[in-house]
Amino acid sequence: MRWVRFRHEGAEAFGVSSGREVRVSSLSWERILAGEAADEVARLERERVRLLAPLGRPGKIVAIGLNYMDHCREQDLEPPAQPVIFCKFSTSVNRPGGEIRWSSRLTRKVDAEAELAVVIGKTAREVDASRALDHVFGYTCGNDVSARDLQFSDGQWVRGKSLDRFCPLGPVLVTADEIPDPQDLEIACRVNGEIRQRSNTREMIFPVAELVAYCSRAFTLEPGDVILTGTPDGVGVFRDPPLFLADGDVVEVEIEGIGTLVNPCRCR
Image (cartoon, rainbow, N blue to C red; front, side, top):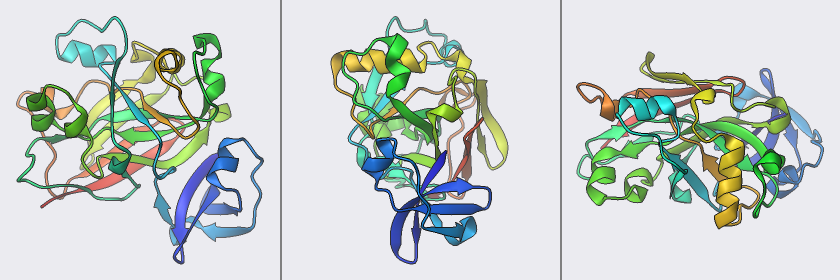
């Protein structure tokens, strides 16, 4: 199923996206994560609803750095021996179509990163990689927006990657049964229609199952937690010359089997 969270006539609800329609459900987010069968209380034209991020305030947004071989190659770096983990604050979550906003007084080097986002469905603690995907509810598109000047000047990445609206997610949350192999998905990022990133999730150094298992050995993954699985090559900061986002740009993250996440940029 392709779940969406949306606002219609002042109310928030969940539904299943089906072509140009949304089949509105009465289920809560907790019941959806528990795997209850979707009901249908109404149908709405998709253009009549305002899509929100598939989940509002995740308990954890766990992000993985340097997890694509091509991304390591573009930096002339050896691939890491184990996953590189940081976090993004839940206040960074942004919706499809929501503006990626920043102040030029704070940062002038904002970059986009196309990423496959994994949403946990069942509590995972010390799980084995062979069973780790059993704990995944589904997948969506993510954009790990990054203020590179803050990221590199701080010596760690949290502030530069956690500004408000710096984690767009969506447009739909596709259940895991529709993506049996998350390691064979085309992934791309476009800015104003121009391709910036194009790769495949098979380039991941640590696949989704290993990431879930690795994280679960250190901390409990709970239903609704998000793992951003890293980005491929082509990011703006490592281009020659560097190429950063600007006011008025439109960023698209597209992942095979999921869809396209579109966000305009606004610099104040």
